[in-house]
Length: 313
Image (cartoon, rainbow, N blue to C red):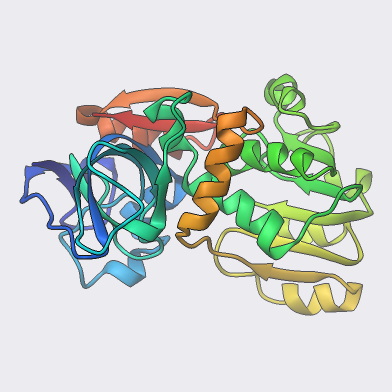
């Protein structure tokens, strides 16, 4: 089968097309013919030598990627929830290796869910790592409740545009930050307020948030503490809280920590139901062919992607 490997960390040109063997499904796995996969910032960071690269430096050469939507072609002997021909989607084996930049991927059966028939493979592939991140942050960790105030940074991005929809589903009052160019998009997702991060200081406008989702890290995480009420929570997605941030949070009476999404088929089943009902929708801003995967990485590197970038096979 065709796949894109990296022999060493570096720029998009390090993604090299090659032919490798189709992987074998174990007794609790399914073999999936990939129809689409999505590209995330963690893909780009890892390829460049950051992100999860430290975990995988001894695994080179390797195939990146975690987010897939496709068709089940083989089922392990102990798998009961899926059958050949099922359309499925999910984030596979994160934060381990899934090797999703390929025509076929093996996934543990408990990492995926059946794809709703009313959404495309592209929309499903987008609704994996980014959507799971938003869901696990807001629901499992912050336990956002109806009536709470939620501030979401980079609200037009992959995680952010899903987080707005989830927060509104949970009944929260939602404020999203983005560039002014994305104001209408953010409000159209359901946000109650928009803050232009270029011309406005969000911490001067919001001072009583129950929960802040920080997808940027660095100084943005520290400033987010000032927007959070005592007893509130700040979750920062980028790894590594800046030095002194936890101490500052404790002084302000705010809970602050990093969070890393993990594969979870039960969560995917719940998200599949919300996608099927139209409560959550994927915004796919750009779609690239498999052969043009380097351009997909370059698009993510701009830092200006609205919604999701997807690669189709």
